[in-house]
Image 1 (tube, rainbow, N blue to C red):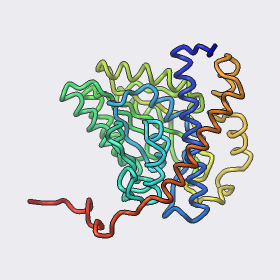
Image 2 (tube, one colour; image 1 turned 120 degrees about the vertical axis):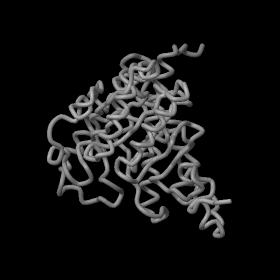
Image 3 (tube, helix red, strand yellow; image 1 turned 60 degrees about the horizontal axis):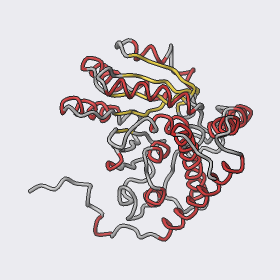
Image 4 (cartoon, rainbow, N blue to C red; image 1 turned 90 degrees about the horizontal axis):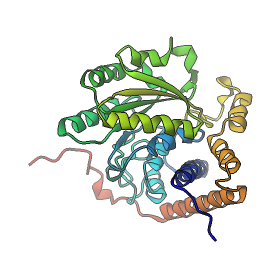
Length: 328
């Protein structure tokens, strides 16, 4: 007889699978770069999976997100298909933006993903505008704006938080504090408490362990429901860590952080291991069952890479398409 799994268990297993999918995607993307098969640079999300998954699991398809230059995890957590993701990274026709956006500009409006943005903090206005649209139209969707700790230095954040607070917009500002703004420790460049920056506008602000997907999801589920009822905006600071450097070419990281620090996070604070250990301890899944999930997703990512490598590039006569606005 098959083991009966309740609704909560299904959600826990889904979050585990989604985090593994993000990690597998990033592993393959990094290998594509090392093999000189991917144009340009990309910014790995490995280590931060619990943030994207915990929040996006609290959202519906109609809810919106905006993303960052480190946005692969957000895209996958919101429902992106790996084949189309890899096609976009490789500049192929079947990518989400027909290969013209690349790693830092993936969007999928059918899943509520309004797009990643290579400009630091560049999507803050888009997210707030999306929330304003929802309120003016009487729609029930909520928008989540993902950004890094370095983006808290952008003036745009304070302009939009002011508007969101004045108009009680259904937007959640999710600050992924991974401890570093590019190559500088956050505590060397960010004075005071990040949460106080939101509280100055009367915005309810929370800090959560960004490596604990269950804690992230619990908080996000509550705030999304409240934002949907008109109680927004909200601000979350999620304490997390990026395993790789600022980008795939940042291989000499020891001049701004130690190998011991990296290993400590990987060994003791890995979000996939934390949830996996909990699933086993609660007898929701066995080690063997979790291994099957990891193997299946690794195989899926491998197939997606091969698909993207064999896919076609956009036609050269489209070089000006989607660059200039067409007028009548």
